[in-house]
Length: 385
Image 1 (cartoon, one colour):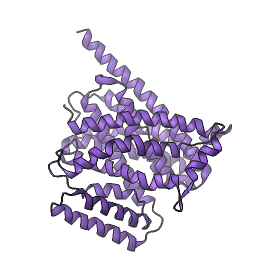
Image 2 (cartoon, one colour):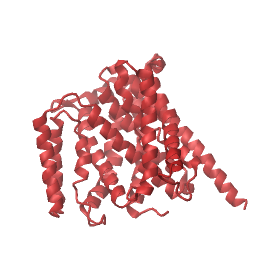
Image 3 (cartoon, one colour):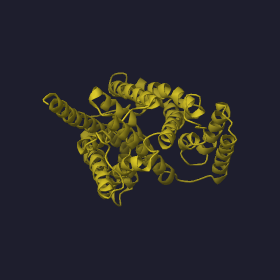
Image 4 (cartoon, helix red, strand yellow):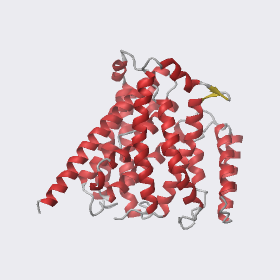
């Protein structure tokens, strides 16, 4: 299975971005627990136009990240792994299991508690980190595994976005929502009229974001729905979709996601931090990501193949699926993002972030070690022939 030029560019940006995310997370945690703590934390709480810098990053810049995810999803649907229903069925089934089982584990531990809203937290996968870790294994990784993990993570993110839209909206201003959807409808007409100038779509996207922000529905949804009215054409280098996607790769990987990581991992870890890890919501996050993800992904993929709904690619084994499931347990960006929507209590948010970091680190280490063993074993068996 060959990788397209666009997919290779996406993989490369996510690979480098994932390694950068790891670096800035370590820097942020170090500064937040150093003698510069007060100064560093005050940077992110600084007021800018009535909102903190963290708020602008989470509700503003992250919309651009979701636009890129939407464009990549659009490309997968038209030209990629999701364009053929038989090929798409495997990552779809796997992603479904990777969302339902972790959410089920969380709900079983938090049933009837005020923290039950956090069920969406272990459902997500951080695509940059997951691909970043996978890339460390080098050229031994089958192309089909890279495609499977990417498709799985993109579908996971779409699932998380749907969860955000449905379950994390408290009150809705239907006037603002109607205006936002009206703008989207106008851009859809532009698309059908074959208007290929990107300016109207970008200006319309900013206007959509403003009214969506004031509608009560999380503004980052704008990024995904905007992606599907941007003209795709033949998907070639001259298409509007390709140009915007290509332009956004580096700013998202090297600016937006690192800023998000810096702002949201500025966590003060005091001497009693471990006590919070025995609470139902933190246990639900750790078990959901670290155990639920690989279990759900492998189980549902197996059910799909057994039922004849999908099939394993030629050079992909069940051991690869299990390894991808482990890497999918790296929730990080999306999980932290949903944490802010699910919880309001600062202490609950703090312990949830720590739980996400622990689960993501465990998933990354175990996924890397396991896949490294599997791929080394395969390579050795080839050499012995």
